[in-house]
Amino acid sequence: MKYNHKELLSYTTQLFMAMGCSNAHARVVADVLIAAELRGIPSHGLMRVKDYYQMVASGRINVNPKVSVVHQTPSTATVDGDNALGPIAGKESMMLAIEKAKVAGSGWVATRNSNHFGIAAFYSMMALDEDMIGIALTNANPLVAPTNSTDRLLGTNPIAVAIPADKQPPLVADFATTPIARGKLAIKAKQGLNVSHGLVQDKEGNPSTDPSTIEKGGAIVTLGGDIEHGGHKGYCLTALVDIFSSVFSGANFGPFVPPQVAYLPLLEKSVGKGLGHFFGAFRIDAFRPADEFKTSMDQWIETFRGAKPSNPNTKVLVPGDIERGNYEKNIVSGITILPQILNDLNSVARELDIPLLR
Image 1: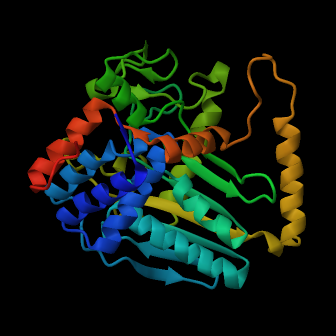
Image 2: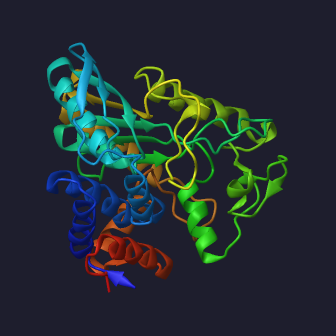
């Protein structure tokens, strides 16, 4: 079923206000979730409402946080999210990185004591309107096994970079450092579908196509999977995001990241505060005039988009093309919500005693 994005934005804001969030905070969370839906990433969109609600209902998330700066220099800062919903801590942190970049040329913010923050591209793209490049990283609850291991020690740990251009749309790269994200596994499981080989393994480390294997002790593999296919390089990427997101800020790292679903018990051991993020913004005119840079980006984009395809029926894309196409389609024709996700939304609405989304 399709819904107008404005209708969904208003309804999602209403849901989070009913959970106890202020209107401003509820709107931020809704903005992030609907942005994911518009960009065709439902694994980080409205599917997360039930997870967030259950975390709030179980007392694991603070719906009235006071996000604060606990350490800073002219170009850097460490932010404590006060156990907020991730989009609230994330947006405030990225705004701070942008403000520091306006003064110092670049701004870097490490965030601790936060939670799942939705799609990383939302934050990196905040820098575009300021003629800046934006970067967003986050660690996540441990569902990923390092190469040659069965232990779940890392998260899917995405990287998002947004780079402005002139006549061309901005280049936006937003990707997990694993071949699949937990949310996409959850959607496959809800649809009763298997996943391709090379994405997950069972608890013994054997390849699996079962999207629910992580609920049975299995794990997501690193990008590349085994060493022959570069899995050790994917492991490096995932590890670096974890370190930047946790060791700089004092958040939990690796296996100590708190679970972002209420049905999993809290860990007995903690090495930091909550989940961690890392944000960066830097002015392109700190390197060369902004108009020159953006003209060069146009040339880069046009060069790669003009590459000869290996299959004449397939276009060569640049990062962000697919998501932008999804956005342009969904903003006009509406957002499709799976029946299973609609049921989850309405189950939350019933708990909160607000009208159902029909």
